[in-house]
Length: 470
Image (cartoon, rainbow, N blue to C red; front, top):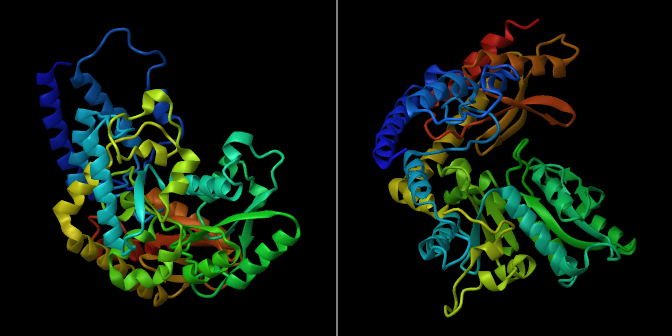
């Protein structure tokens, strides 16, 4: 492809993207293909000779698009959003065009210095104090892994990387059952082991860790010869929005000298609205905090903001400096590859800059406040509809419910069939979870272009389909 062709196709794809987003409501939210459809539509062998882009793009529309679940659909109410706003797309397009590898300051000074400034913009936006610094990770999973590695190394006196875990005192990490499964995976990868992730019972309407139970678990482990390493707390857990009392967790952590990481992957974005910050009161006492701008702030995936009170601990855990990666003659520069597990790094700060400058904090706050308001309105409408019950109350824009007509013995089966029928229908997309041993349906509002009508449509569609089920 020559550069004239590149310019032609760049413009054509931009026009295609405009039409795609303007007509998303006409598409089913979830892909309707069967397993293997896309795989079997692709040739078994790679092409020997190149083809023109007309043929390639025609096959993209014919083969790929039917197998896409439309995460930018305004009636995508499943999981959490992965918003991609137009300015974020354009920033990522520019990043793709210049294609820098931003592992060191010297490999692209603009990327490093913009990352430092954008992380501080985000810190100010969510109300963290000035003693927090940060780094852009690819996902909250990576941030949690980095935090778990840091608590491991700090607890072992920085010898784990050199000596390994065999022969060391067995480490323990504490969390509630409401945390994301990325915590489990981080514990696997650090070598601490699933059996040493201690699940603390939850209590109260916020479904947070019981501080007394946390204290007891740590004291019991110490008496049994284990070595507590840290606590992973949650603000806005994936299933129902479970949120720990961060102040109380930090009280226990300080008593035992433990590292605290707060996973606020989804809910952290809402902290740009000061009225929601009581959800994580005490967060300034944590050692590590993560939230994903790529969820609710309209910044294209992937982009996770990881804040640390003492980044030197993270760098000491992760930094490797062979001669070929040293930056000579430049004092005081940050090499963010020393703050992350991967060496290679994308220029993610550019899309944060584009989004914040285009919408401003005020525009993003209005969007989040609307989603929270509309979700609560929908929750009340579901509550008032016969045969439905609210299982967990709204946490920001997330709540759970189930269809519970009188006389049905197996409500789990009924609700699973309902959510599957809703998603097969295609007008909206919901997911299920399990709470207090009940299978329930999750609803969350968070798609950037969603309207109040889109949100309220969720009940209309759900009830229409529910009435068709025996």
